[in-house]
Image (cartoon, rainbow, N blue to C red; front, side):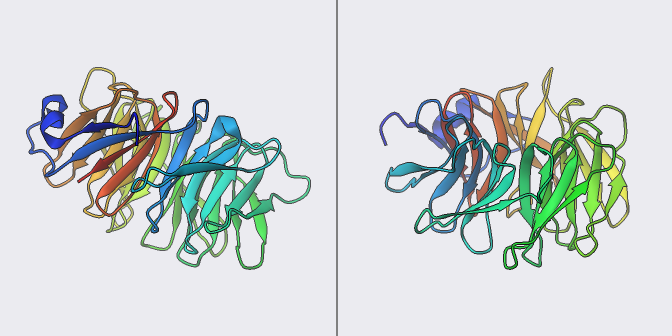
Length: 320
């Protein structure tokens, strides 16, 4: 594809800030432009090879095919302002749309749209992020102080008031069957019981962490980005134990977090304008410098980490 920026492993070696560890093997960072003004917010690689992204400013769901260079956008409707996107168990992209106050399902094959609006009379919840639990129910956060669920088969949508009001942001399902979300404004990790919909508040150490995004590794350990504190937080439900890990650099500002299939932890660090990889076994970081550091969310598939550089109208991938 024209204008795409390719950095091979040899070039990355010159940009890599290694903190006592060894670099990933055969690592390649590549950027893909999307239509100007799209402001891509979240990104979701799909099993069919395509990569979906929310074109927030365009009110659309975009996609690219890295193999062919093809791409396009699907308008989601008048007033749409999509925030998050994930690929569901059905292989289709599911969007949390703050402008429509709804979850939106898009048929990958046809582009057909199905909306799951919030119950009648619901306030504008500022829809944020979603995750599917082990039963196939979608759970979502609303930053205005809510969380909720969608049952795809029945179409039932539930909305709950979040503890401590405003703040619910990132959300992820864990191997223990629970769904965990973090509150940016209220600074806690919430554990949702999918059966009852009730939340248990889990308090991280310290004050003002700014818990923004969360992900679970294969053992069920939760990794949380501390936006205000500059720390990566680790929570082990088995022992109800927290650990704080300071990010490298002068002014770290971790936004997104994702754990890959090798249980390596990836973080987008706005302070360093970089993507970081943390190896829990060696307790070491590696840093991959970006030309634009505003990556708000991370997702991946085997051998790949994807993010969206919102201000630059680009998607970025690291292949390893």
